[in-house]
Image 1 (cartoon, rainbow, N blue to C red):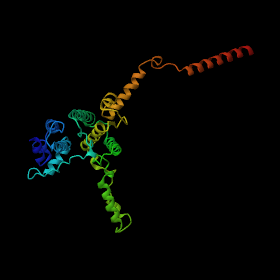
Image 2 (image 1 turned 120 degrees about the horizontal axis):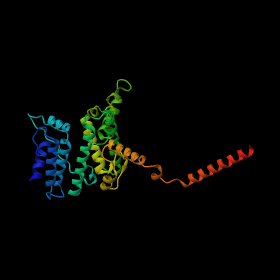
Image 3 (image 1 turned 60 degrees about the horizontal axis):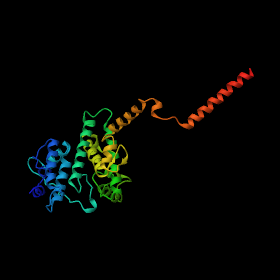
Image 4 (image 1 turned 30 degrees about the vertical axis):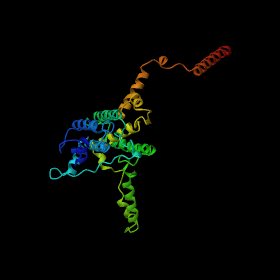
Length: 304
């Protein structure tokens, strides 16, 4: 019943059994978890369970921010009409794990969902409380751009298909634009006129809006950590989710900075004799210097 109802839904709100209006993100998360338990392929044996699970996951990703909800409401044309959403695409075999929610077992999905919730809470705590002075819009943009490049690199190495999380200039849409520009150059009125059709990928005006940039960063970090076990701020890939939980300082750059500072303070709080042993070679050279100075002092006394 749940599978059929989800697949018959005409918009993302209906997929998650939500009213066609702005709702609290916590409510979206609650509805998603309940429906995921009902239709996850590891829990549901219906033939189209995977398709239904994909549909509610896409809806959750879209509605888990106020920005996404506002966009969906505009697309739905509320209250006059409701636009139909794109049919959920069942991942092919070579697209397995292309999204954080693509898991074989319910237990793995639950762990990834909890990880995403922790990431969201950490990001909002660090960056949304008035957007701390040290975390400027420029810094947010840098993190988004860096995360996009990391996602593309790791996805390509893993053989995953092109993703909306890749840098815009690396997508098929960008290549299509380049082809159109190449054709336009053949009839351009003056040299370089066709280049005006090329988008400025460094501009990214949408990233100047903190809520939009924050949501984009959350999606990127979730993908990197859940799919690839990669931490953007550690700059490395961990052996397992447990390994990451035990050794990664946290989700945000600030948590990494605080961990580094705490480590330095911890080292400085101990006397030097307790923090490190004296190097044998340095001790030997010091004794040689001391002996040489002693002999030099004796020679000076004899010359007097």
